Structure formats: C-alpha cells, structure tokens
Amino acid sequence: MSYLDGSVKFHKTKKGCKVFFYFRTFSKDPNIADMINTQKFLDKKRLLENKYRGLKIGKFGLVAKCSWQEVAILRDPIAVKAIKLGIKHPKIEDSHKIGGEWEEKGFDAVEKIRRILSMRDKE
Image (cartoon, rainbow, N blue to C red; front, side, top):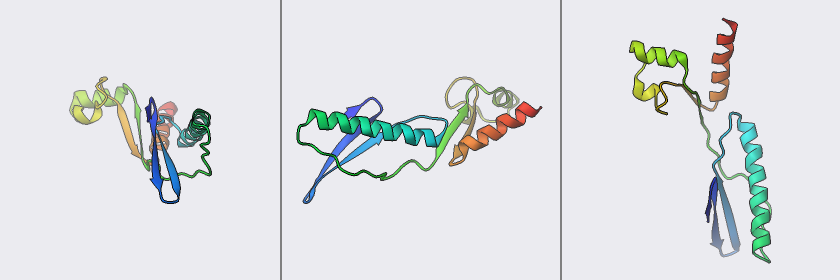
C-alpha cells in the first residue's frame, strides 16, 4: 500500500511474513531524518496492528538507507553570478529551475554547506 511519504510492502515466506516500510523523509540533518523515520515506523506499525486484528509486527531493523545526500542553498547569489559570467553551466547550477542554486552532494553534504555559509559569515 502506498501513502504520501512512502509505502508498505508485505513479503510472505515459508516461515511467516516480512513487512518492509519505505519512507521518503527530507531533512537538513541525517540524524533528524533517522528519528523521523523511526517515529513514522512506529506510527505505521500501530496503525496496521489496529486495522488488522491479530497482526503483530515484531522486532525491526534498518535494511538500508540512502548513503548520500543532496543539499542546495536555494537561489544562491554566487551561483547566479557564476551562471551570468559563464563559469558554471545553468543546467547543472539551476537544476531546480529557480535561477541558480549552490548544490553539494555526498554523505557530508550538510557539513560542506555549513562550511560555505560559515566562511561567508566571516567576510
């Protein structure tokens, strides 16, 4: 079954049944995203167990999570200026179609963005 920010899938095996919860959570901080996902799981578990009498969802564990993040400073003045000067390509630096944004990717994307902002604050 699908819902607004994810889906639930049941996988029947010879020993029983497994349930997989897929969540789409957006957050600036990966730790906060993990906390939100845990709360979403508990809410969905409670909802399913109340809806289907006799269903008991046992122990749970994280199967996988996205290993990278993409963070953008939206409408970043430096990225806009770089596009106008021809230093940065608009298809790369304007992927959100808002006039130019600064993007960082990778597991440390949030930290990269924080470093950029702190360097600007010092100027």
